[in-house]
Length: 230
Image (cartoon, rainbow, N blue to C red; front, side, top):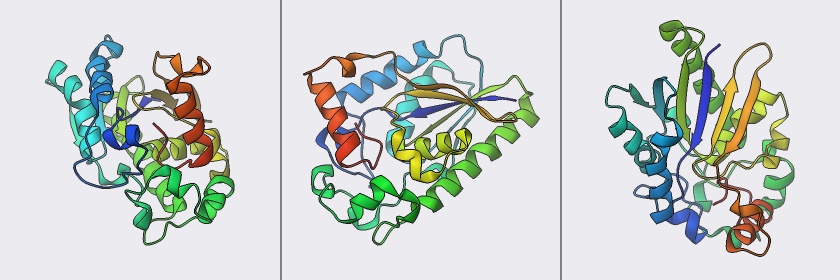
């Protein structure tokens, strides 16, 4: 079976300012996110990618831009099925503010019961992104063979949903999964699917206590676990 490399887009101005961007157009990578994107070709050096698929939002296209420059012949496809969750009325609100919303308790403990006000349900998100991942995986295998490797650049909650499906765990457990910006997760859809690697960034600074990185990541993962954190 092919190997899927799930890439979360680089850190954005919304991530670094604590906003839930959702599908807001024009959200770009911040300075750190641009550096993460610039490092991607070297991180993937030597890996023969058959194709890259990405969310149509700017932050995903921008994350892949240096890779496309380094590999001009790489087939790249935008797919609406792997766009960010539609957070409806929660879009562009701060994570700190959203942490106080009554619905957040359900987001934390029972995501399968959540439909964002004026937006999408997390069950619908998982259905469409898993369908896209498995569909593209079958296409890649048919075109390039079982040893092919391909890349999908998408968003935090989407990656959490795909990983939960691959592990065979209920959507209600997906908040235990935290993929950081620019992290790479590897899945192979065999029988059963295998999680080969999760959340690889090559950066361990978040685990140094009492640093800005450690404080930010811990707070966002526990108080407002939507959007994947920063």
